Length: 326
Ligand code: UT7
Image: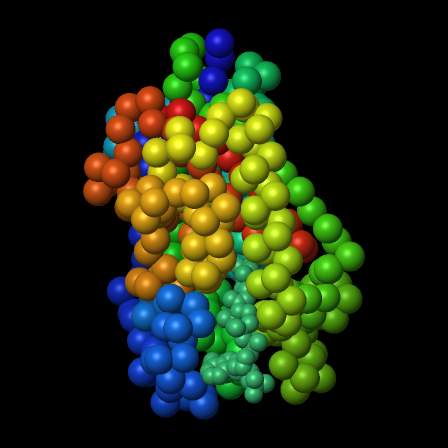
């Protein structure tokens, strides 16, 4: 059986840290409210001169080093992001240049916080179709650049960083077993950034209206995310004839601790099988699952042949899950 196996992981978060107490000096909030409602204690944010490709590059270097291959071995680079350095060219092309991986095809995927799972699934398809043998998949974001630090309903949530994996075409039972992807574009107005695209290109008016910042109806997103993810993880297990107790580690998108706990409860997973790092990074959108995966890997929380269940939900709406045998 040909599979896409994860042979290296890496992650990077910027040095600058914004704590809950820092935010309480900017808006009417408190450490206690943020911790209770979200589980977030602090988040890392871009410093001067740092952009999404800065983080993607650092995470990619670490993943390549662990994989034991060079950038020259890559056939393809896919970057999931909603905060590219610029509208065009893609972060993947900027990264290809930084890595000097000129033989690799390169493109971005925009699928909100589910971007990494969309990118992983795409890479898996290229590999199993026989079109690629080594693919770099990165989730990278600079959400601080589109966060409105006068809006307490969103600014407490988001952080910056990147995570990366190297996938290799291999024979055997290890690798990506299955992915499920979903979208519901009818909910696009519940989590979006109105300005900067072709509908509302930058103008003094769009800036005055604060169109270049994320807008979210958090409570509606929360309710839909819990339902969609509970259904999605149940479906992927049923599809693969696997029961919750066979999962060694749950790696969820780190958007809200209460969402992660709801999924763990549905699967009846004990605490030690649920990876959580939201307290350190907040919601880093496409970067959150690969940062968590890399941390779990480097903390030796994953053993050979372990079953990992990943899931994410985000703007679009988009959501999905992936089942991996390590
Ligand atoms: O990654 C993409 C997907 N995104 C998500 O999954 C995010 C999903 N949503 C959430 O995580 C939660 O909805 C939030 C953390 C954003 C909000 O938590 P909530 O329990 O849904 O709170 P809420 O929006 O219902 O607001 C409850 C109260 C409101 O006050 P009133 O109307 O009850 O007086 C808010 O104005 O909390 C108030 N509030 C705050 N208070 C202190 C909202 N934000 C804050 C804040 N500090 N930062």
